[in-house]
Length: 599
Image (cartoon, rainbow, N blue to C red):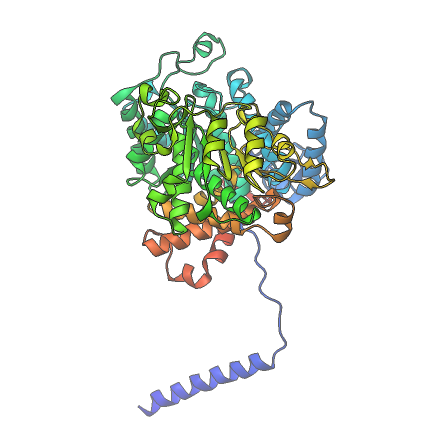
């Protein structure tokens, strides 16, 4: 016993001595964290052909020696900043946006780190080149310009084999998949496998804006056929030249894909993109409670539209509870967007019945309203779909034109989800200006050729009083009084990268409506006073990674409240969710590279 007390006393004295030494010692700088080396199976010239590891002229001499590439590169060693500047100079020589997109595709195929470094540091210039509006043209010419495969294709011939084919993908740690069946590419319709440009472009934004590492994303196209006769006759079309699968065959093919994906990567999140509305809505309802997935055209667009709406209402000095909305467009996806706004109204304290009463929806036949015969009741005669019937508003007459609906319903918000160009004409917008001191005009359709009006038209026809948020990008507008206002693009990239990042970090088992609402609010609350003063309804795009982090934090915190997270433990909670998300975000810088195959 005495011996034990003596040993304990010695240990205590040692600890106290160390503490006194620590107290007396001069302070030292914090421990510096150094980058970990990447290990690649390639050696020699093969290293230069692997875009995930290739640095080109940025390989230093030590790496050139140990990787067996000395003499295979010019002797000058460049920094990533010097390389990025060279890329930007080269882009300026390209004649048009399509050519710039092709140059960037080639860069991505050679050097992914440099490609994403260029995007992150020039996102305002790069986003329109890698996604809308340029991606529409790229998709239309996909077969003619095809150079190097990227992503995976599953065709109708692969049915019954997908669970084995999925293992052909070389990366074991996929976090995010974007999938399309090519049936409704932007406003361009059925483009079949040419629609692969959409998942590729979306995932470029996931990496640049949301910080998901490029080896953890996977673009996918499901080739179920095409009904586009021009594609079937095109000798350069690369997809199946048969009519699209329909009915049970179609759904069974999607079922098999989802089973294969989640069997290999149980924690992946799947984003559905550009499925035609007649498939998008039932697929969302089919999978949303079973898998970690969401539909960006419905839920992402709805969430970002709600964010734009919240910002516009704030800029106009109003309250969402006082809003009245006329929506042009009654497709399933568009009405899904409106449902997100309904959820926002309910969160603000309104009943669902009251929230629905604040909407007047116009189809191509006119307003969805009371069958009183005043305008021939064209929607009732044609027959209402299940989703359209819940939007019928008895305070307007069925078949009223858009202009008549605006004058009768007296909205403060005009929402365009129609893909009908110029439907917001001078008469309609001037009526909005007559009714409201600060009308809110939201032409949401894209690409630009499908926009319901331009930002300049909205400002001009309201004498500069409108608050404008659009689905397509528009340049700043100089008003008659000399002010310059900046219309914001209501772009899904403000929302979906953050949702994917939050799901990836936390492992939430599903994406809930409350998460989508809070993502909208997080985006709106990310704006600075200076941005609001400029007339913006969204943060400056150059702060997109900050916005994505805020959206991800909102998603994770709601996941914790709902008990849906699978990756957040005591250590992560002690670190703090904002710090955890920031630490998990990929930033494209060069890392040391070593080869596993030293010959």
